[in-house]
Image 1: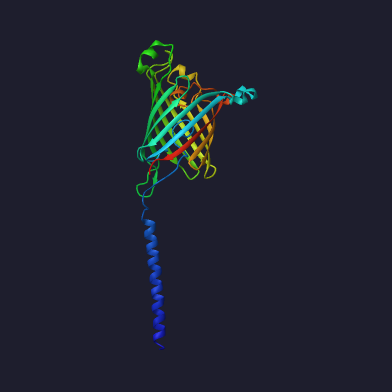
Image 2 (image 1 turned 60 degrees about the horizontal axis):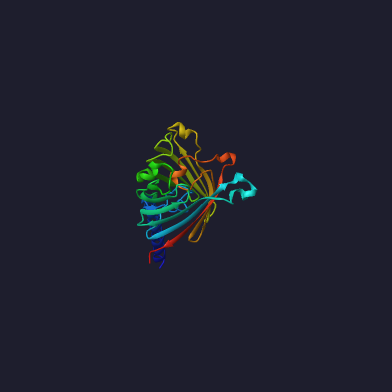
Length: 296
């Protein structure tokens, strides 16, 4: 018995030491082994930052319906309730997710041109972590503006192609952390027929936008487009700047914003027909987006 007890005690010490070594080895293996690849989710609250598209897309078999309003400049003062007495632009849009990479949409603006806008967004690459991680979201957005109004110009009335404008955008975004997301949006606008001969048919712009989350349901958004000064006509215009707040409530996203843009759609405000944001020529607007799940 005197020999057996020390022997059992030695065996227990050896086993516990071996177990500790095994745990240490497995922990080191866990550090070496990369986690599985995972997509980074929810860079923005909705498919738009404010007026322009965000990197987010509608999920498969989901439908987004959005109503947007833009009022007169706040510089009109209290007699016009700082512009709220006059609605200058309303935009209705539908967006549908064909699959988890492609969404299609249709929008309509009641601005002077009374524009109908079919569009498409394709998710090319996604920001991810883990194995073969990728640092950015990359998407393409294409939009066709079909102006349905009756014009004084015979060329615009008689030729269907003269009513068409084309917008192409590359969306590059990164979710920096849980609060901050940023996006770069190079854009090309081509107009088959311009309003006057001094306007170029092609405009090029670079968008800078982002979102900062206050909490799980509210964020501050910003959006600025710099149009490249490729002609004297462009140099006399103002670049669009918008600042706003997103509020998420269940299946709704409610946006409140101020902008110097005179219209709610890309083909119009990228042409820089905007007020000066810093002299009070800004307008208040809001959007309501409702999500419908059509997947039974």
